[in-house]
Image (tube, rainbow, N blue to C red; front, side, top):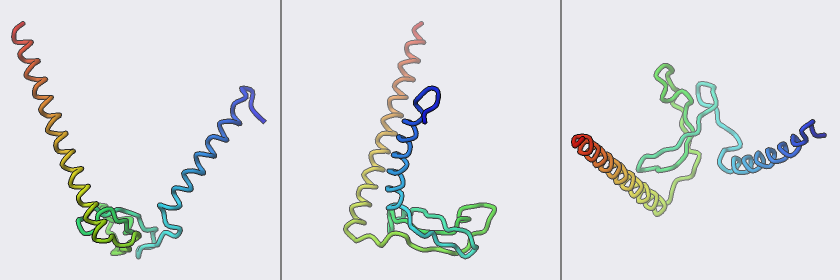
Length: 126
């Protein structure tokens, strides 16, 4: 049945399709079972960005990083170790990304400085 306006039924179908797609993607990304840490809480899935394990996901205590709660020492890798070749490629890409981000920051600062100088020169002549 549709409501008075007649479009409620269509919206529900669209939403359910989107939800199904999200669920399919989510099953690949998330584990079926979330381990419990030593404090009894579900462990948090995080990502390592160290040079030894770039982009590798792991489970750790949910309290880790909190100023007020002391975490337990639970730790477990979720992803398998990277091959040496994939590790080198990933580190190279991360380095290139940082270089491009730094260049973009410098370029934005330069344009801002040019804009300030032009503005000062224009208003000083008035």
